[in-house]
Length: 344
Image 1 (cartoon, rainbow, N blue to C red):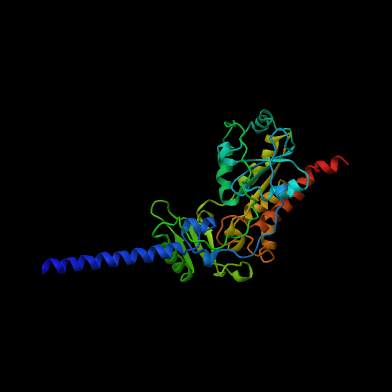
Image 2: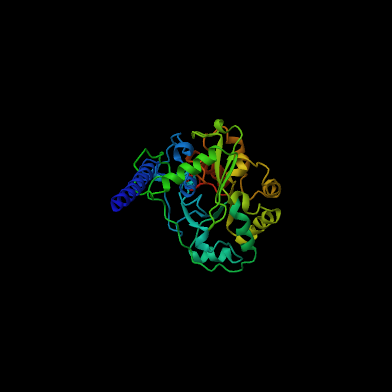
């Protein structure tokens, strides 16, 4: 009799555990697959933070690269450049471009930069150095003390698919971990209930911030449009300095006879929450005429371009890439007319 009672207890425990696991599995299966890097890393709901505005097209023919010895323009950039999205504006205007990542150079540009370009086979005239605001200060500091480029040129290949792809439709999340749906529900609920939330895993430290954004629903298409996700690096990393702006100007001499155009992409938090975050840097950078003011461009267009920076992404949207690409095209044309124009 006692054995039967014990068996029933264990059976109930097993059944309860089984039902809990089934509930967790179903929750994870029906949690939308994250397509933004912030929602994926932070396990945050795409239902609440996924963008909905369809992106404008980018012609496949403009998502293209050339060997370095055939390129008119060399791009040194980070993850904002590896999608070949903003470059499409210049390719469409007739420029041949090749792109490499900062990581391929060890994260620095050094004192022998011009000779490195020559040894790499670059026969063009313009180098665009792109960096997101939050990482540029560190890159500049390391470059200031670097005398010799230690890595051979290595191109970054174009993406396998057009960067102007629409948001994916719903699919069962078969690759999800058992608890991912629960974590997504828990984190999203906490964000919606708070004005200031940070995802801080013990192993990594602060990763993602969620903050209330003024007039958010006039700027974003996601459901929880009064809240915005950002990488915590925007807040944690050092601000750009006047000293860095001066180095960027002096690098003109280092890179001669090649022309360097700097492309500084503003942080998401700078665009929407702390518009004065880089004011000292901009005051030194802008009069030097070494690159366009993308901070001002973003500020002028954040209400005009819905989802300029989508809530679920650290990067700009397709519309943002096109906007920045057109501005970079204007900047390049000032120093290097497109080949088509020269041949007329």
